Image 1 (cartoon, helix red, strand yellow):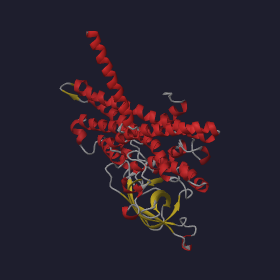
Image 2 (cartoon, one colour; image 1 turned 180 degrees about the vertical axis):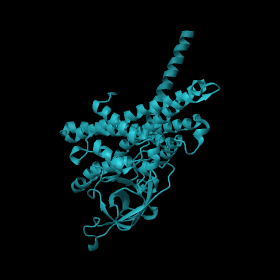
Image 3 (cartoon, helix red, strand yellow; image 1 turned 45 degrees about the vertical axis):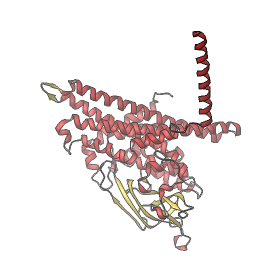
Image 4 (spheres, one colour; image 1 turned 45 degrees about the horizontal axis):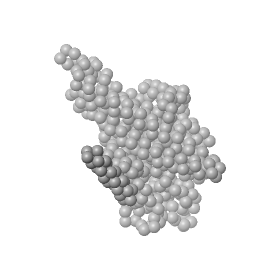
Length: 456
């Protein structure tokens, strides 16, 4: 792994940090979250025009910049540092890669250039608050049962062959409700995971629902973290278009997306944690108590040093996760384009790389969420009485930390599933264990006889 960033990656980070420092201070953040969409639309269009932020990781032929998961993670780190309220996570991290991977040629040609240009925002709607499970971060592949359907509730899809649906929604109808959809109240395009085929023989598919579709009811929810707006969508016999061909493997595509999303979300949490730590260090240098800055007290130094170690460790984990995702994608592409014998070996390497990226992403996200929670908590504590006032900027980071762990955690579930995927809790093989125990007993007996002979 090459830990050095390229000139292009450094420039992306530098430019985005400068723009956000100029246009996205705490006052601007508080003003933006109180608008109807929950973000500054003018700033979002500016970032799309100057940096291509929504299409940073989309291919050039689709209108994107053509960068990879590392550049996307670096961008998310900077938006997390500023607590930038934007559709970046919902659109660029979750929705756009699915359209690119699963969409038909016509769907990709219609939607991806508009997404990359900032004209269209999108969001992924997963029923039951099961986003991390659907992404394979806190649970295994259960065939998409998390989408509900039948007696399980969730969102149900039925194919309508009536003439009244011709050309309007592709002949599918959706019914159900999804809560906690990131930017679900304002996104121009919704990717809704729904269950079709009945209760016993159902499968999960993704459907495109356009803003303004008849029967679609959306509302913004009151969220703990205003900088990450959430919405509720109600689908009342809503016309929808199937994403991709009928045989698209939705569950597998979501699981592969999970590693990329985890790396981006981990980097975003690291950025927020680093900003909270930086603000706290600046405050303890200037706050005087007993005739000296409180930052000179050894107890305060120790607490901030522990936060620093957590943040730097989480940053390293997030960068490694992004690198692992990029390597896995490169191995997969080389396997697709290779010959028969070489392609089989590359495919095996790609599968192993995908598993490594998934585990690395889950662990990086867990470590970043923990670092963000610790940094935000210490920020409130070390700011003293003023830090406990609800209007102080420290609470922006505290709310982001609490909200992120509710949406993308909890930490112990992320780590438990990563450990299970690696087989750390697997039962030992009985035959191997018996052979090992027998060999150990034999060696013990031989050693006892040798010691006895020496003694005699």
